[in-house]
Every structure is written in structure tokens, then in C-alpha cells.
Length: 82
Image (cartoon, rainbow, N blue to C red):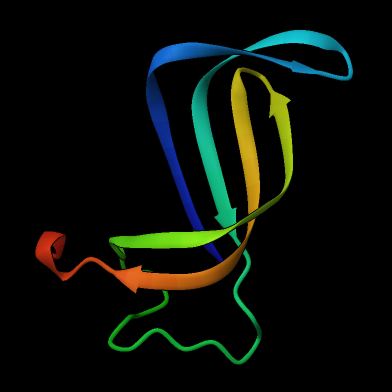
């Protein structure tokens, strides 16, 4: 699984089943297929990539909007690698 969490520049006011809820942080969780391999990456390494996919589910808890994404493509961003 790939995950990313960051602060939003401006908080969002989203509406869920409980009504309006503010979110100042976004967390993205990308579920990779069991046989997926990312060339040259270690388990604890930071990967800079673009993920193209479908949002399967989203929730808001404690000011964080969490997005579960099913990837169609993970494109490594070599220009921003350390």
C-alpha cells in the first residue's frame, strides 16, 4: 500500500452523511495488487509518483479527509527523487 498525508493550503468544507465537516489534512491510500512491484523501491523508501486511479471511498475523521484509491497507473516521478 502506498500512503501520503499532507496539510491542505486552505481547509475544505465537505458534506458527508453527518452533514458539513471541515478537513485541513488529506490522506491518500493506494491499494496495490498483491503481485505489484515498484522497480528500485525499498519497503520504507519515499517514492515520488503520480497515481492515476479511481476513488473507491472517502471518509472524514478529526479534520482529515481519507481517500481510498484503486490505481490504474503509478508513474514514478524521477525528476523529484533524492
